[in-house]
Length: 274
Ligand SMILES: [Mn+2]
Image 1 (tube, rainbow, N blue to C red):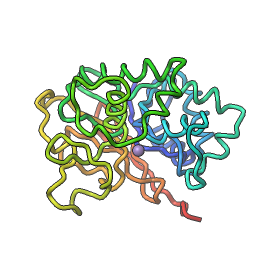
Image 2 (image 1 turned 135 degrees about the vertical axis):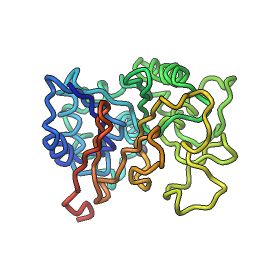
Image 3 (image 1 turned 45 degrees about the horizontal axis):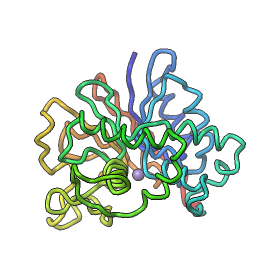
């Protein structure tokens, strides 16, 4: 039995299937984990979700910003953009059932004692234990009857700095932003959402979250994340495993084996812009 973590799928169903075929994934023996952003931008979000849901206990995921945005659009809190290619999913008879399945997924997961999974990463002031507790605070509401008011209040970039005293909407928005939208931090602890480029291309006033020292984790602990396609899998550290390699933008989709730390990938041969 092997545990595999796949990077951002973004509705690229055929790429996902090619990648699973490449490793001869067997849902009766193996388990697939995902870093979130299962939907949007790619051509087939509907079949991606139907397939992943059909894997039952052989699949687990954390939520990404695009997954949450899909829930907000289906809940009529936001308008769909054509560029998200969510039409067939939104109009499907399965949309509600898939959304109800998705909103019971967490923002952070511990695959084992020393491995944490989240869409964007781990805010540098949080331990693994605290990350799971904070994820649970959001998940309890997202899985419950008031989830639409949570989704309605999640948009916005403030507060941009963690404070244990944060309460209600402000607290939940920060937790969601840190787990699903974080890339760079300024002055060590302040989230900055505008910059998306690779760290090699920007000046030193911003630091990637994984270069800000985290005193709450030890060297044996690893964090697996997606969301940041311009990293192209490069963090210069085995402790931080970046899996979004931009398949939806014409690059590759990457899968990482937990047990042997090997990466597998498939190239997107189609032109996503035609
Ligand atoms: Mn994302």
